Length: 382
Image 1 (cartoon, helix red, strand yellow):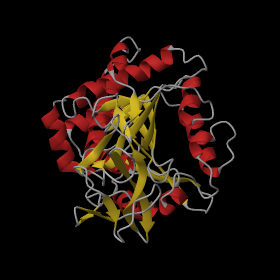
Image 2 (cartoon, rainbow, N blue to C red):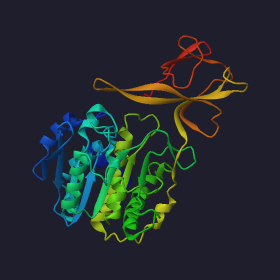
Image 3 (cartoon, one colour):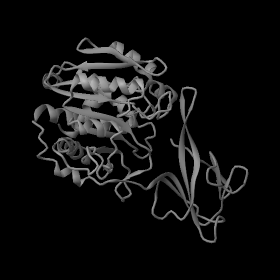
C-alpha cells in the first residue's frame, strides 16, 4: 500500500479519544464497548489488583496473529495504534474485508492494567512481566500464556515502547521505530522461525524508510529465555518485537503512533497475501542496530565545571501527577559528550550555567529552569 494511502487511512480511522502517554483500562473501556459485533470482546483474566484484562478477536482467516500491548504499563503508544487499527478493520471496506478473510487477530490491548494505572514498567507485585515467561509467577503472565497455548498463533506481535535515548546506529538519527526478531537459543541461530519474523520486519522497514529514512533500528538479539519473545520464538511461533520510539518534539508519541499503525497495516497485509517462508529475510540485516547516543537536551560548551568546557546533558523523567504525565528535567551527565546527541541542543558559548538559585548544577538535580547569560531558560519537553 502506498505511503499516502496509509496516511489517509490513519487520518480517517484514528481513535481520537486516545491521546498522550497515559492510557489505562478506564481510557480504553468506552472504546471497547463501542466496537461493533464484528469484534468479540471478553475479559480473559484479572491482574494482581483484580482489574480485568481484556482480549478481543476479529477476523475469520486461517492465519492466526496474537498481539499484546502494555506488558509494560508505561509503554502505551502501541495500544493507541491498536485502536486505530481496529477502527480501520471494523470499517466495511473491501480492503479490510479481504484482510479479515485471511487472518484472525487475537488482541490484548493492555496486559498489565495495574502497571498502566500506576504508569510503571512492572506490575503491582513489582515484577517485570517480560522476565516472567518461564517461571509464570504472575497472573498476567498466566493469562498471556493461556491465550498463546489455546490460540496457537502463526505470528506474535510483542508491542512495546522505548526511551528517547536510542539512536538508529551511530548516526544522529533517533530510533523512532525499532524491531527485533528475538533469538530462540543461546547461539542466536538464525532459524527458520526467526527468518519468517525477519521477512515481515523487512517489509515494514521498506515502508518506513519512505517516511522516516534512517530512523528505524533493531535491538541486539542477545538470548534470554525468561523474555516472552524469546520463549515464544523458541516454541516456533515467529515473534516480532515492536518498539515505539521518539520522533523530534513528539513526546506524546502521536506521530510515532501513526508510524506504528502503518507498520501494523503493512505487516498484516503482507502476511495475509503471502506464504511467509523466511526466504526474503536478508534485508532485515540492512537495519542498523540501536545505540544509546541521545539525551533529551544537551547544553554545549559550558564553563566553570572543569578546566575545559563541558557539556550538560538533561534527561526527562516521566512522572505521573494525578492523571497527568509530567516530564521533569534531570541533570543526567556533566562532561565531554562529543559522541552523544541531544534531541535539542543549546550552545552556551563558554558561559556558565546555573540553577534558578544561581548555584552550580550537579548530576541528579531536577532543574526545570536554568540560567544562561543571565537569562532564564525553561527546560521543557513540549
